[in-house]
Image 1 (cartoon, one colour):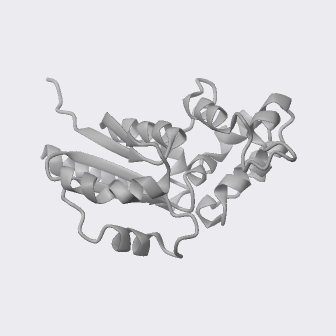
Image 2 (cartoon, one colour; image 1 turned 90 degrees about the vertical axis):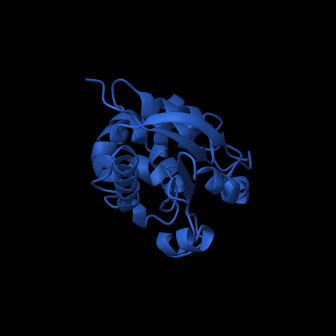
Length: 206
């Protein structure tokens, strides 16, 4: 017997987000449909009302970083999209999607070549998870990782030239792949996202 599958369209900020959220969908047992956005947070939020209307006819997952917009993710979700359609799952990574990667401390530490004890136990409490991850990369004994993740002195950039590529490599790594099933135990915002997707799946396939 072939079990029915639910196809979920994605609305994301960028390439790293897409790869991470594809893994989340896979973990929940959902199929990734068309991916939209990938032009940053402001563009995503501007287009969100239109995609919310599309969610009357299909399943959607939109994920944005909370950043420093407000203290509570729930307030941000309600104020940004007060009337989500039944097919729209609008979730927020606290305070950035890097916190979800930090939540799998064992494998991230192995990938970076550092001690797991260096990684904060509650990444959702990090004020700037991106900076936290970059500072962890500074501790790596792997020169190539440091050069690609850490911004070059005097460059004016916030991240290194290979930042996105290296995070994607970690998520998809065959040796130290990022594990949503582990990360949900240490990131409440990821856990809430998974729970919401499971609810959407049950509603649509029941």
